[in-house]
Amino acid sequence: MFKARSTLKEQGVLYPDTGGEAQHRLAFAINGRSWGWEDKGGKRIDFSEWTSFVREARRFKGTVILSSESLIELTPEQIKRVQTDVAHFDTEIIFTFRPLPNSLVSIYQQYVKAGLHLDFSEWLETELHTHINERKSRLWRRHSHDILIQRWLDLFPKVTLIAADSQFPDFLFRKFEEKIGLQPNTLRFEDVSNVNRSLSLEELNALRSINAAVREAFTWDEYLYFVRGGIRSATNAIPLEQAGTRMGLPQWAFEEAKQEHTQQWNRISQLDIERIHGDLDAQISKTHISEVTHTDFVPNRFVAELIRHYHFYDATQKIGTKKLIRELMVRAGLKRSGTFIKSLARVVNITKK
Image (tube, one colour):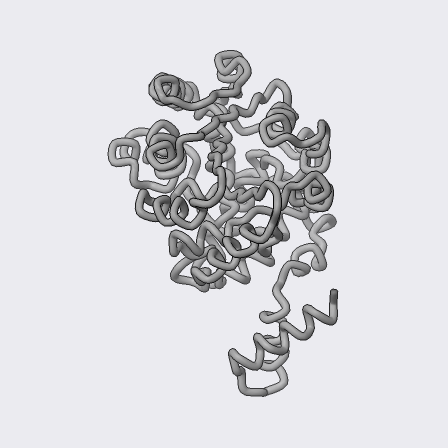
């Protein structure tokens, strides 16, 4: 949607640019959570960003889309605030969904890409045998789908769930287009098919080792630009089939995740919502099973490819103007004034446009 936002606007649909491909900043503004490591430079987003978005949405004569997976972590009180602020809209909540057995490897990898260095087996053991009981860990705050859908349904009567179909990668794109009235093929799967791809077991082990080495030494910004961004650039340049061993779920974890999925789906089926999905059982049966969850081996070829594909420009191009100006002032020995930096950054951004 971010890449197609000009086309969307021509079709009467606003997908606001809020400083990222998705509107995570707005979700953080509502729930008060910081982006990144809270104890090491993670930034809190001011609530005014949410109110600015609401004003922009009110001015637009058409459909407005707000998209962020982080909205799933809103409390009932925060959802009530959203309901109040969008009361003048005919609002529909659309969830996307993947069966839990198909998701666990991907979820774990996303956490590693954010700094986790816990071994996969230990993580699975902790989440499936301990945290699942209280459902307070981030995994269960975001993936107890029956609870979360009910939470939004309590305040918004129109709720739809679209289950992604791994057998047809563009299924989610086509069904979403139909749901909001976009012309066919407005959303192009090929534009994002290799963005933030899965990591091989060898790549993941390399990243976990890096995380363990830099977690105490780096700030969140340093990690974001020079580890997370750099690894993403490098691995996106290497086809997954050439990257090493494919990660999979151990059989015991698959069985427990399948049981949890079944219980959630049965409860979801009883809710008064629209469900759009393919053959979920067929998808679950294709979950990759592997008892190999760890290796200390990192092939020399991968290290060479990582260095060859690590582009400094790609790792740094998302650094904000304000951060660059602050660094220049420090190097020049000038006093850092927050107001001055913001004003200068604003002027530079205008000049760039």
